[in-house]
Amino acid sequence: MPAQKILSIGEAMVELSQADTEGLWQVGIAGDTLNTAWYLRRLLPKDWHVGYFTRVGSGEFSQKMVDFLTAEGIDATHVGRDSRREIGLYAISLKDGERSFSYWRDNSAAKGLADDPTVLAEALADVRIAYLSGITLAILPDEARTALLQALREARAKGTKIVFDPNLRPKLWPDTTTMCDRIEAAATISDLILPSFDDEREYFGDSDPKATVSRYLKRGAGQVIVKAGGDAIRFGGSEGEGVLDDLERETPVDTTSAGDSFNAGYLAAKLQDADIKAAIRAGHALSRQVIRHRGALVREAVEAVRAES
Ligand SMILES: O=C(O)C(=O)C[C@H](O)[C@H](O)CO
Image 1 (spheres, helix red, strand yellow):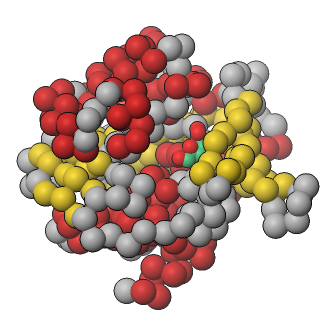
Image 2: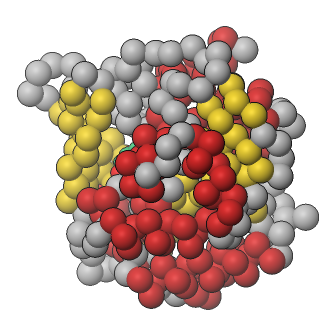
């Protein structure tokens, strides 16, 4: 069996989120796959290794990102460099706690993350869990997307489990048909897929979470867990099926990273032998704490779930 290693693959950016004082913005580092890696690092015991796979540039902010990963205990060995590009930037806008994003990332270094198949294969060697999202796929040129899926397929044949969050962001895709097509292609190699129902309904036309579960199972996913923004969570697949409908709701301050933190809470619990329902509760508990605060990475949220348990 591969080592106790998780590799998260994607793009992290400079994050601008509104500070408490009107007109002031705070600068952070975030990005969906990094957010999950960051929460995983804080939740898992130290004998688990958490790494991040991306590309950055050579300027000051790129270095800040690498320093940040290292300081947070996330292995940055497989962060590549592109001397002609820089890291991207996004800003969070809030309306009644629901977030939307503005992006400046068209030319970000992460677009080249899958350009070298040897580097990819090296990074994936002996990894127990490879984690990626629909955003990881969205930012890549089509050829690189195919190369990434191929590298993951090869790793999977050697025992790596693939965990995928579709994280649908139509703004990042050429069109919604391409988005839906490539997301479903990734589902075919996913051992676990963690979609969010609102997005799946909007872009795939699923009538309810059960429809989302069966659509992804038909595509070949092993297990599906459908997040529903505080509503009942439906799951199905080779590890069991059911629904959890007694989860406590939270009025959000900022929903950024709700899904990313859920995924980390779920995975951390599952990797420490929780059953599927207990792991879903752990994911929900973390996500509930995260949305009480602004920004993607919330230290207090991890402390709060620790204090609760
Ligand atoms: O939209 C993106 O690419 C981001 O990574 C920004 C946020 O951190 C992320 O979407 C939250 O899930």
